[in-house]
Length: 511
Image 1 (spheres, rainbow, N blue to C red):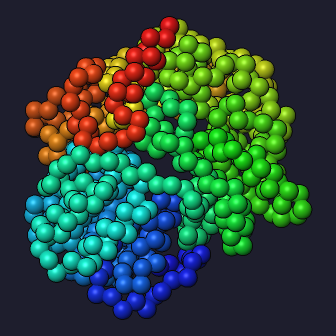
Image 2 (image 1 turned 90 degrees about the horizontal axis):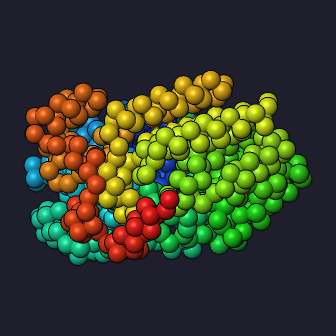
Image 3 (image 1 turned 30 degrees about the vertical axis):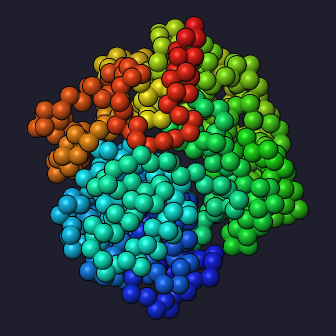
């Protein structure tokens, strides 16, 4: 615990317990303190009177407990390359990286979107995984481990494998992804001046997204869309404002909340009554940009916002199930400008299935018209390249080759630069390796270990692939047949595979 931390719940710090665990964040402290899911998991377990739990991060210098005291070592796994930091943290505490070499060490587990989607490239390194929403299952898992801490590791793992939503590689079975009801509001339980978002109270308004873009893991992995009841939201906002004036509303599609506008009005009225509130939101859907929403954002000090349009042409937006018209986009910009927002950043994607030069030209033309019609308003663009993700309709679609994508990237940079538009495009080469990891199978376990040993840079991925003779192009580029057994098929996610196949066919037939 740092002096700058402020707990928003009553802690029992004098626990009489012989069970200690670490909850690890694979990154630096400042990022951990802005990670809502990580902090909430810590809070729920910390509320147990007989569990000693400590947070550790990549830059943790001193711990309360020694590794010899730790019985359970849990990791948040949110990004594909988190394995590099996880391995570094295990080595820092002299914990063998592979589970088979850890008989007298703590049980090591992971949860989060990466391993919920596809844990197979990492199965050798963890004793078990939590698949899906972990709010309730974490408590069940920790309780079981505590009550059976003196039993052999193998016996504990066998018991864990009987819990719904827990995947133990040693005892493989079909797993149903856990889906949590959002009856209560998940919020930042610990404020910190050293957080990346300093002293910011983050509130989860909704989980999931009903738009179901064909490429979007965040949408499909979190279906169905669940919204926190309005009264719970208001109660939580008031709690946060007792401790800080900075709040952030979080969710893949917060504007889909049936009372999103009521929440905005509640905050706007408080500001108008003299309360100094700074508020930010995760990116807005274009057709949710209204006068009341933008008025609230600007009154709360937000100067810029982001709109995810994904593709420049209307045809390609239909292919990915992002059914936005150009008229809607221009209307959103007009509303933002009229209500004193300073600028908007548009997020797009290159290399989407069926994309052609015509679609790229449409992106440039859209940018040109936006710039021309909104002089003095800051228009910028950000792009990533398409990465096929498990449990989505586009999981069978191979990615375009790196050379072609880099040509597209250079084209957009050049043309948008001519228009005076700032553009940021993610690394095509890094996105390639993300695709390999996303669609990888158990054959990648020694590969990811070698990547880590070689330093984790781009060259390390190539070296590791060559050493183990792995055709990484297959995972990244191959268009899979619908009858192919996919590495993650043992994880049951709703809607199921048959729906995804139908949706794939429907979307890719759009001309």
